[in-house]
Length: 54
Picture 1 (cartoon, helix red, strand yellow):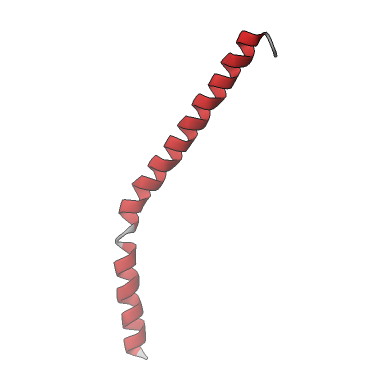
Picture 2 (cartoon, one colour):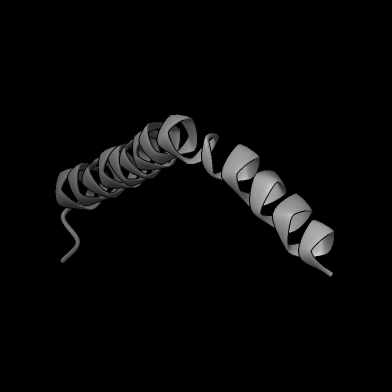
């Protein structure tokens, strides 16, 4: 039974080494998506303003 927990611990330690790399890429993806949404939103606002709509 000890071998099971030791193996599980080794596996989890290996997988947790990936998190620092994924952490920044997840933040970057969120920033890119929000930036694209903001640019689209501002484009729509300018389009409606040019057309004279509120």
